Length: 527
Image 1 (cartoon, rainbow, N blue to C red):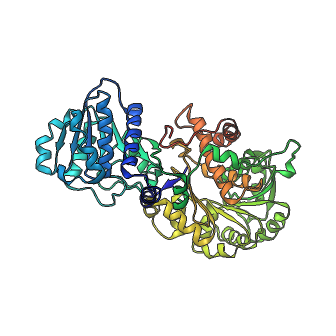
Image 2: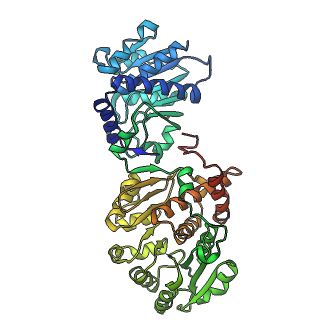
């Protein structure tokens, strides 16, 4: 499922009109008709009161005029509040506005603050609102009486359908521009926009329905959006195949370098999650004083005691035996619970240069890379980085706020510049690859905000890498299934489940995708 920017959507509309000869008015008609269906399905209760269509003078307003016509033709009491003088509405929007008087839809002109003040009491009457003020092109702060109107609608606490995108929401980042409509549902056209599927935008959109308005598939291919919303069907095609006569030696052997005093759980979860993701064998290399503890925690994994400093941290001399242990493995995972000692940092950096295998680097392994990212250009194999926003900020030398303001841009910059696959964890995890392609994950929930979830993800990514997935497909499968496992647990309780329970639910998530892939999900309900 493609995710587009505002500019890409504009290009798709333009190509459809100019190259394929489909008039803009036809696209507007299709948009309004589809949005009406969403309104009736997601918002409206028959006979429950008046619908107010609040509209600007552009094409977003034009879509609103079409919706008003369809609602009125169904006998629904509908009134249009036009935030402009009527004679300033042009083109296809004007043509649709002119149709309303003949079917007795009142048009209330509110061109300025004074008119709004006079009409404000009447604007308390609608039981529902259709928001058609601004479209996806908004990139400036909402001010003046537009802000006052948006505040009035939000304060009224009436159900709202947003047309294309909630007015005041920036389509490319999901950031509110000062004031923003709080929608119960959004009907968007042609393709979902970045702001619909990333936070905080997802908070404002409610349920998102993508309406087919007649844009040819060839147009999408020509514009070639490089962002995709991961779907269960997509993951099913990526999952490693397993022959009936397969055995553990054919399913991948992973070396996990992890653990330090007080952080044995991180190492154990990474190792066991790799097995839950389907890896045939896992060897966990740990400081030798921790080996008794980890041997009892990871019954199905093998442990490999490494030289340590006597206090449960890797010693510098661990490098050679770890490098030798790579000989019969398919993947290296490094970092969970490893600690931030100088010896551990040096070990990580030397292994990045020396390792001939695909690598997953997480947690303390990422901290060891801060200020040394140039090492990634010297590596000999694919690498997957799995930072949370704080780790990403440290790697990029910026603030967490800068990362979170545009997560997609942050991922793409790092992935392309260093030729790595990057998984930026968090609500709507973002995955980027060295070619600049982006995948956004719809699974997962707020119950995952607890310790150990990242360690489980690291193990899952390594598990799929070891089974022969590419770096990108391993990341996509692991991230999606990790979130889906948590969603299955959240069906019983919204929070309070543990990272180990998510790990144990990975096989169920895999089976769910194989049996009946869940549809793409945006903000909870179905697209």
